[in-house]
Image (cartoon, rainbow over all chains, first blue to last red):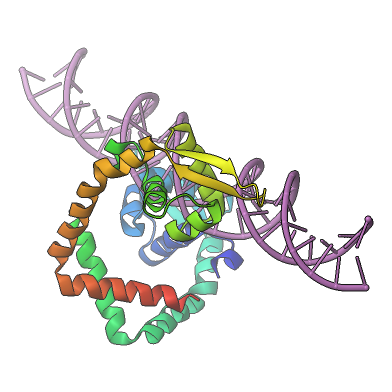
Length: 115
Length: 115
DNA sequence: CGCACTTTATTAACGTGTTAATTAAAGTGT
DNA sequence: ACACTTTAATTAACACGTTAATAAAGTGCG
């Protein structure tokens, strides 16, 4: 699905964050999309090249930027969100609701252990 | 631990396979260590540069190679296997035996679903 | 035998994860 | 006001995952 949409999984995640939560600075995007800043820097460059996001300097703190999804960027999300959701619900169904939830719980525990 | 040993996680896996199962060809290593062949090609080059493996052409089928861990390569495993095991048993303990097993089961199911 | 097909391994190209170094802009304190 | 520290983002360097293309050796069948 992502290949057809012309974006990588990480680019998709960034676009979703921007679509769902509005314009924000790279550091916040990185947190939301679970990406390290150096990776995000490259991803934003690609997204900008593709015309899916724009960048603007934050005038109150000129180290910061404000990243916005363009209409084209939001269109990518809109055109694929249904399929994306269906893939996830299909997976949940195949695994079984209970086991699906258990899996997510255990993975979260695992993550928590590393802190 | 791996950084101290001077190998990556994937290089460690390759060395372990060779240490535990003896010399074998790249295709078999890739299966055992769950690596794609192009990745393995690079990894074997690095391991050879470090003097941890040697390559030999298989005379009965000259497309094939036989990869062997050197003494230095086996030493890396020997010097770190205890620590490696301890890290895993610690994890199992922190998570709890039952949950640990459930997690592995669910991840295996997830993998099976993708086939 | 010769030629198409398959298999083994490598190379290329691209994107990401990760750590360290770097640059620019804000803060901070004296 | 100016050195010092902190923060935001980028760049660099290296390794891996992944797909596609390529090269070399083996296989099979007319």
